[in-house]
Image (cartoon, rainbow, N blue to C red; front, side, top):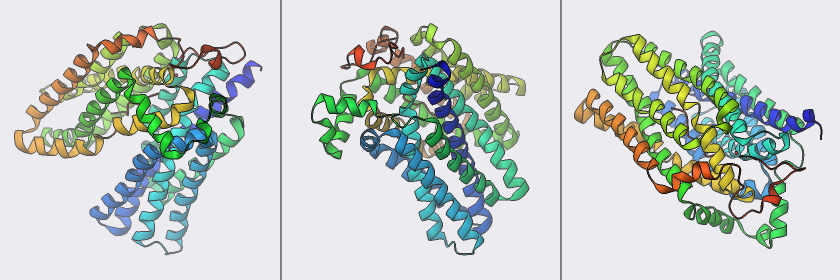
Length: 443
């Protein structure tokens, strides 16, 4: 296969991720504004937002075995098509004045339920796309991180501009277009056999290909129980995700109000952090496969996490606050490439769907509690003490976790295949993948 042909799956997968994630980010902004402007009810707005996110997390957790069995390419394509159809139905029914709240909630739930498996399917095709393109897996996951950061930064900005100029319904139309374009890219750019190598191997390994759903689901739990490094990653990321949610949902807005800087400063900090995270991800994509993972990972986590809490607790100039957020964003760009490489190396290809689905769901389990914990803490102790305590908890979580012996395997396993899978099974035309993702959601 020529170089151009071998890179096509990687380029196509990144392009599909870009447009699909952008559509997701735009819809996350457009739908609440649409409900708020059409109903005037903050309660109904919150209900619709919940109706999208709850199915996303739940269905993503449960469809891992299905993705492994049916194949990620098919699930990715179907998820994009279903998302486009449901979001398009919202636009059409509203134009026809046939969109009561119950119907809107049902359609939004369909969008969320389709996005979860669709996003999961794209994630687990990364190692095979890197293998086909002869790309080091840290570089592939670094490029995936760039894609996610760009979508997170530019999607809301584009959606907000369209909402301001043309209204929320036009912005939701952008989401429909993005989802539809994602399905076209998947169908055109990704080979039909994409994602079926693991399934073919299952058939050679015995009767696993004929096992039922719950048996496959249980295999994901059984595998994680035997992986101390992955379990440590999940616990650490779960705690930091809870702290990140408390920061973004409660602590930062309260700080903006009490300091007098207002929401514009929160937006500036988020934008700066997102843009520098893109730069960090680009650097990680270029050089991460040559660096020692463990020191880079923990230094990056310390710079990206606790510093934001501490700087808002102190009376410092605006330029210093922006500089800390910029530094944190750049350092955060190194995290997902390393997390992704660890997961792809350790999880056998045939188990990626069910294991990654469980890993992501467990790591995100604290996010819904973050705002509640942050609000109760601020009401009880005040903002500055909670910011200092949150920064200290963040630093202790990352530092103490790193002292555990299983983290030494981060560097030792570089270039090795997943446990229990012979190296020859991972080779493609003489190429063994050097690495590939447990996600750490952006702050």
